[in-house]
Length: 243
Image (cartoon, rainbow, N blue to C red; front, side, top):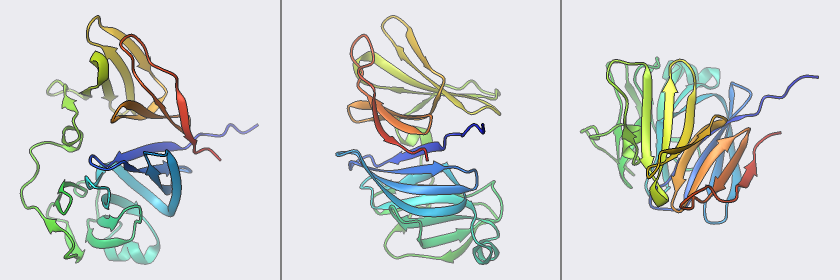
């Protein structure tokens, strides 16, 4: 019997609107984009992308209308135009670029929204413009914080180490913690500040606080639960992305 490996999931959540984007990766060189209605917890499949999208360098505008993403691969004609990697801005959930910058490596690229209609682009000497848009304004000043801090996380990492730690304060005195020990993937746990009670979540691939609940990806499924003063509430599977 061949063991089926579940897809990896990552989501971008709009801060001012109940929408999100889910990236389903699997097999390794295929990514399917889904539009997530966070009010009804419904998921609409979008484009299938042949290549890799870097969610940690991607962002969703606060109102959920636009997406900025960094990608590797694609069809041959597009690779020759972008030199293999690129940053694009699209109208979510589409991946079709209304603005496009070639990169050619994985050192630069990506960006963040600074408002509903403005963005900051991570560039270096290898970044080159292919297509621009008048719908959005480019902000020349970089945000004061990185991607994680931009969405409410606090960097608790110690300097000059390969261990990266981010924490986010959530409801009822709980903290959500993400730890990355390079080159291993992220690991998660939640901790109750009052008494230091920790609940390890070793199988989570991604996690965030969504208004009044905790949401996370695990075993190819997107799940959610509320947090009480002493324990996690009933776990709901919002969608199974396997198969």
